[in-house]
Image: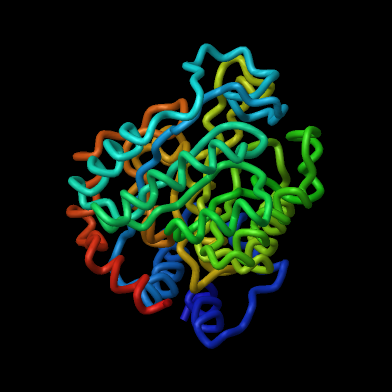
Length: 335
């Protein structure tokens, strides 16, 4: 039995990987990659079988953000030429939900730029979510920035199932990425969502000049936060942002990162998110041996892969899309 299979078996017995073992995953030799991914798949298969969860983003508000996040084309310091607009109306949010439903996508993600939502913006989301739940029965995830406890309660009462707020990077690397809010601000928003009864979703962006130790710290921090869903983004450097031109990632390293997050967070939904097409490239299918969830369609200001190509990839892998009905059953089981 090889070391990766032995490590997976220990994780399946409830043991935690050590820091040295975590770093060894990120430094896995190239000729052992298939063995590593097979080991990660044993953990993924135990908890999720061959099911894949599909998610779709609605960019409900674009640009107009006062924050200085170095990776983001929507930040105040970005010179990227993007569309900027205020919160879209309810009809637009409902149109997006219909499209998600028609594509058999279980989770509809309403994302808005900015430091945090105004009460009026929360009102708009609340109004739309009630109708989305009644009409389409989708799982709804909101991502609106830093959240106040009373706003979190209102979103939960309207039917928002999940709230996303990424930690993005490690606590030690945070000030290198943004100074307009703190790492603790992000953690506090995740905790506010949890306290309101929403499922916590928090993830990372890999490739922002962090160290391998930072990547391990990210995975451990999300384990400590008990995030139910962990989006793993790979930096898609955008011209006009401070991280323009940064290109540190290779497809094989991205696979190692996904394997690491599966080993450290064995029971959680690991979602391959922004940047998968440009960073994993032809190795995208292998990522799903560690992850069990993907975004379908476009992201916020960058294009994704054609929906039909994503579905073909899943069929070719022999994986199965989690249906809206299965998603409803899983939500009902948690009530």
